[in-house]
Image (cartoon, rainbow, N blue to C red):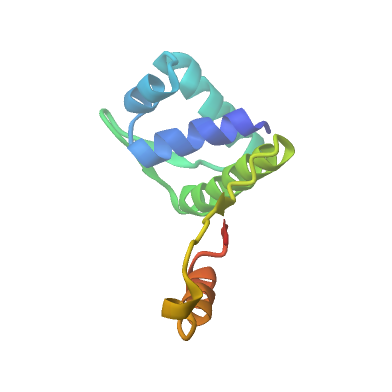
Length: 120
């Protein structure tokens, strides 16, 4: 199983259509359909119920959809980390001590707790 299989399956499941997923993925529908079928064969379960114009997730498909989304998200985080794209933002705050002495530390602590990815 490759990440590509997961991406294809997630696209089909989230859009409810092979045709729409193929457009978004810049593929034609037959290869996309084949890749998802290969994934189902590898897993030994049916993930999608194919209709004439749409697809629906089976019970196994719903479970696998959630897991596949998590795997893809985790893979994206790994790629960003290895590229040095940590996603951390920096907030620079300027203030005068006389006006904000009593509140600045508590406000910044609350902000930091609410937005841990932002470095102050």
